[in-house]
Length: 177
Image 1: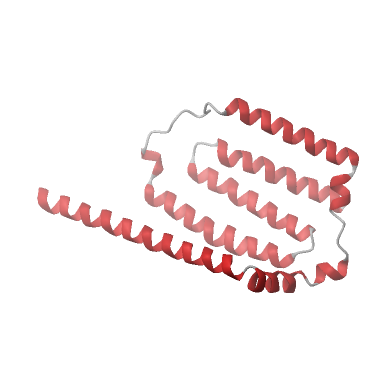
Image 2: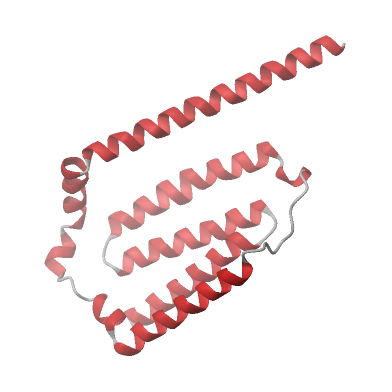
């Protein structure tokens, strides 16, 4: 039964991920991304990792998607002209997708995919939050801090760019009056 749910969640995640990049409306794209991220959280639950599922929902679905939707609404992308819906890379993309599905089908047929889902015992899975925390804050502390500094610099850069554009807009509006 668990394997059936895995395939259902995975199928919905793949379909919604394809819709993210294929719809024209940015708000609809964000909605499909939320669906995809929720399916990934469901897959984490199936892998007996509720901590990662909660982090997935809180950080990605909650915070990042709210910021993305806010940016879409502020930028008002609908006013800009959109390019052609199907780009020139559609033929190689279809080839890669077909190859991916053939490989996944081959793995399912040979039993490698279903066997790899059950390789962890319950005792190891029960301590996954502790293991993730210890690994993140011991072995990967430097990359973790570098990423946090990069995000801080990106946030400051975005604020500076917005404030600079607002200053130019005020000067232009004040000079024309």
